Image (cartoon, rainbow, N blue to C red; front, side):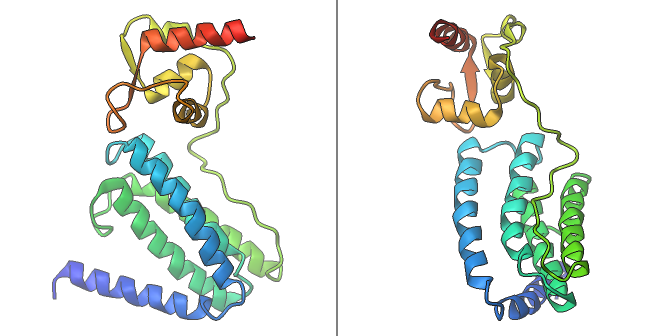
Length: 218
């Protein structure tokens, strides 16, 4: 048996053990539904943006998906047996995250896996807190420590002076908005990116016109 076959066999066995425990819990069905509904929307956004493999932008999507997949099951942790099952499940979610980030198998790890591993440790720490407090602690989704949230309010026209087009992040910075807000502008057809979703860029003149319209509206 090849090494990758051994890995995949153990991966399946570990996941099956975790699911055998979690499937017996009263809240399991609700957790499955919550995960599916949120995961479906997040995967659509990832497919639409289609950031390059191994890129920082793609990693942001992947870490968000890891959160979405994990959080519903955290509420099922109430003692050491369920903690062990939760650990097995989130290990599989880490496998998936790595494959989504790199397009390659999980056992060929690289330096970017550190970010995924840190996220997994954050979730496991939350699970241990629940066990320590009798399984009743109200939990919140752990934040990504390496990517602090930034809020913008004023447009930065300097970013638009030296190029006819800019990428998605540069466009958001130039407008003084978050990436999520920029996505909403596109969805509402207030802005139209050039080059399609696979290589989304924004024309400088379109962004300047948009800023001008917003200032007039205010």
